[in-house]
Image 1 (cartoon, rainbow, N blue to C red):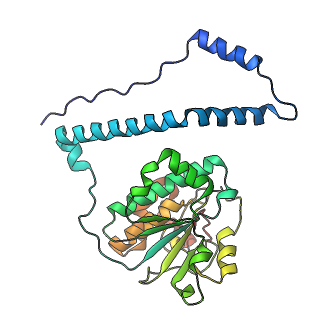
Image 2 (image 1 turned 120 degrees about the vertical axis):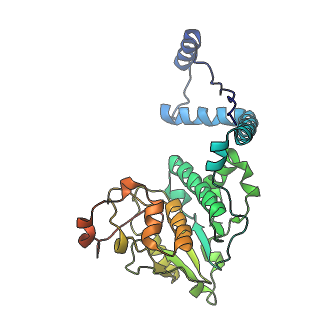
Image 3 (image 1 turned 90 degrees about the vertical axis):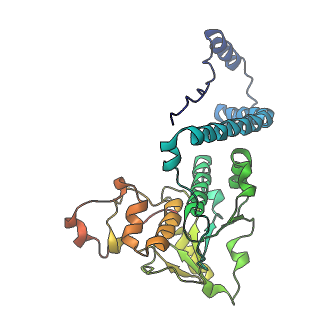
Length: 297
């Protein structure tokens, strides 16, 4: 069946010369309050504009997403090749008795751009969870402050996501002397390589994007709380380009792939982009003992 042409997306027209000139004049006539820098004033004005337009923005975003869903449904009906290429969620998932927690108690250590990145990574984890053949439910801990605000403005439908639990409680609120042995904090700063994901365990991934500014952050937190620590056995199987980082969403997806194939090397190669992996058999001897540090775990 031949595919039907889809309606083209419309873009906002560029500002006219008159509009550009009007904006310039408005900037010249701005009265900046005493004691406030121009940069801070611009931030305040931007926040004010957002407060004035956020309701309309949310309405526009809902309409945009509705149109995207309609375009996708139309393409699924009319394009056989596209329909066959779309990955479908398994009808049923195999129970694992393994839980994943993403510790987001690092909100204050990230700038706004990093908050946006963290929100996108959680959404990517949700997508991986839905398409995994095995059940790996996710708890998002310390879901408050700017990360929650980001979801409420850009992904308000998150409240209807299945299999992922957004909660304001901190990691410390969940741990007791009786259940402490069930938690394992994943951090690259430990020498303990994990060999398999064990039933009855909750594996904690640090939910932070920080460009490696905060050294040993997850390690120190786990040590202070007296939690077991482990790291994915990357160094045993592949060599990673040390300039790159392993993001939170990659850690979760690697764990999904491990359950599906029970092979760490295959899981790493399926998930990590080729640019992260150093190719060549001659690198094999350099893997053992090499410290691979990544953000988010």
